[in-house]
Every structure is written in C-alpha cells, then in structure tokens.
Length: 208
Ligand SMILES: Nc1ncnc2c1ncn2[C@@H]1O[C@H](COP(=O)(O)OP(=O)(O)OP(=O)(O)O)[C@@H](O)[C@H]1O
Ligand SMILES: Nc1nc2c(ncn2[C@@H]2O[C@H](COP(=O)(O)O)[C@@H](O)[C@H]2O)c(=O)[nH]1
Image 1 (cartoon, rainbow, N blue to C red):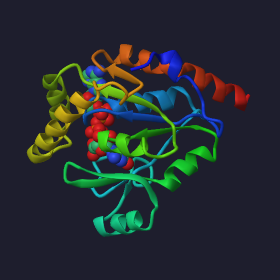
Image 2: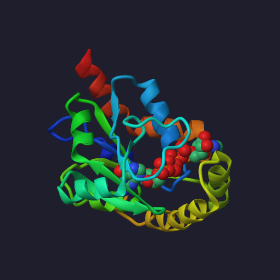
Image 3: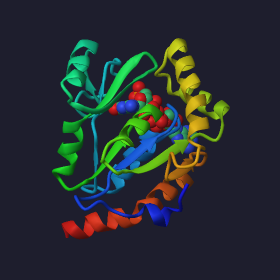
C-alpha cells in the first residue's frame, strides 16, 4: 500500500477514475452516494450492467443497466465491456460506454466493482485510484447484509464466501492504493474524502 499523497496523481486525459471495491455489504454504495451528493458535478457513476434482479428502489440506467444473460454475453463477445465477472450467480460488467459517458463530462468516474473487476481493470490503461472498503469483521459484515434484507439465504452465503476471499486479497501488497475500514461511517467517509480531496478541488476549479 502506498500513502495517500502518492495516489493523488492524475492522468493526462482528465480526472483520474476511482475504483471502489470490497465485500458486498461493506458500505461502498453508502459512501459513494454520500460523496456524490456532497460534491455535485464532480463525480459521475459508471453504471454497470448486471443480470441480477433489481432491488426495490433501484432504477434501470441509474443504479445498473439491468439486462439478460444472453444480451450481456453478446455485448461481451462484441468487445463492449472493459471488464466483466460472475458474482453470486449473476453477471456484472463495466461497459466502455459507461466510462466514456462520465469522462465526456470531465467528471471523476467512480466504478464499483468486485475484486475480479479490480484485477481485470489492472490489465487496461484506465489507471484509476484503487480503494478497498472493508468491514471491521465478518460478523459485522454478515449483520449488515442481513439487516439490509436484500438477499436470500443462498445469495447471502455466496456473498459471505466471496467476502472471505476479498478480505484476504485486499491485504496483499500492491492490490489497492488505500484500504479503508468502514467501522464508523463518519470516520470512513472523512478518510475517503481526504484521499480524494486534491482531485475534487481540481475538478471544482476547472468548472469555476
Ligand atoms: N459504517 C456503517 N455502520 C453501520 N452500517 C453501515 C455502515 N456502512 C454501511 N452500512 C449499512 O450496511 C449495509 C450495506 O451497505 P452498502 O449497501 O452501502 O454496501 P455495499 O458495499 O455497497 O454492498 P453491495 O456491494 O452488495 O452493493 C447498508 O444497509 C448500509 O446502510
Ligand atoms: N466486476 C464487477 N463487479 C461489479 C460490477 N458492478 C457491481 N459489481 C460488484 O458486484 C457485487 C454485488 O453487487 P450488488 O449490487 O449485487 O450487491 C459488489 O461487490 C459490486 O462491487 C461490475 O460492473 N463489475
């Protein structure tokens, strides 16, 4: 892991993208939504494709592009995705268009992907900042996932199994630039904001 100063570099082509990863239920969406709400016109979300069913309140085209396995596989075969992975029995993927849509607006592109996505993005020239959001423990993670009431018992067990692998890999040197333990939400959010503060300021200055 390098210090946060070292990850505050930017690509020449515009704001450097941010990859948020970490176990399902660790708090990625919670932190990301707050970051985007508090910094309007700074961040843009890379809307992934998925074959899973929408949860109550999720909007097609905003939270995900909800699609079928056949359509997604066709898109993958046509080279429309920079990465894709199977997670908890469903396909997920980042389309090139999802990233281009954000970059065209000169916003910091945020990608929310699992650990497989992280590995695949490392094979591309996207050059994002890699941030892992981790829960304080497996017990806390399981409680958060159960309390969220979005998973069947089968899906929950698959997610916990994936989380064990994720938690091990996230500690390997060089995988992530920064690992944030999301125990106290306020503290985790302050840490995330601090890591991105230079990038946020540069986008704000460019717009003023
Ligand atoms: N620091 C925290 N303390 C307590 N609860 C939290 C904290 N952070 C997030 N939560 C809660 O934990 C649950 C999981 O959070 P969230 O949905 O943001 O996780 P996620 O990492 O985005 O999961 P997924 O990858 O499945 O989308 C939510 O109900 C959220 O309100
Ligand atoms: N490799 C990818 N992983 C993705 C993508 N979009 C989301 N995800 C990850 O999937 C799990 C489960 O998400 P959920 O919304 O069903 O709870 C989570 O870890 C996400 O980070 C993607 O495009 N590629």
